[in-house]
Image (cartoon, rainbow, N blue to C red; front, side):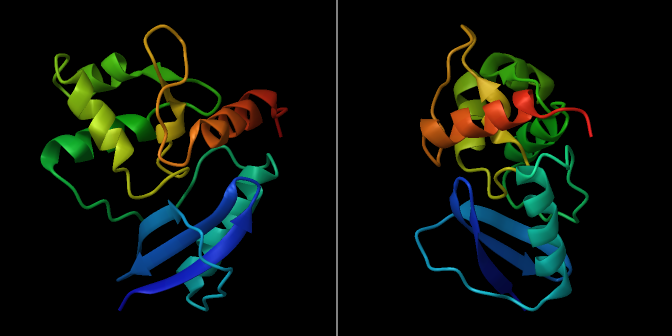
Length: 153
């Protein structure tokens, strides 16, 4: 059974969805804050709060990422980008096994169902410039600055 909660964060409200003991979604939303009572929702909320406070660099959550085989490879490549670092879309395509599929890697990034915990915000243009982000470039900039300005905890 799917459960959800909506939390307020420095980058706006995030809707957290869990089902069958896995996180199935973290997405930007305009919906109002909503408290959920599932233990995994509470744990996800706690880890996100720690991340925004600069006390968490990696997430330890059971994830259920639904997508094509290539999308899943891209999302796995995103999970391997260290906190505070970035990769280009071409590097992600290569890590996903098809160096020529840069646009497909970008589209997989765009439809990432679990933002922040699966760090699609860490992918930038080959020239080092920020490129599209589902939540908006100002949110991407905020997240990257949060990670590069966080002291070692």
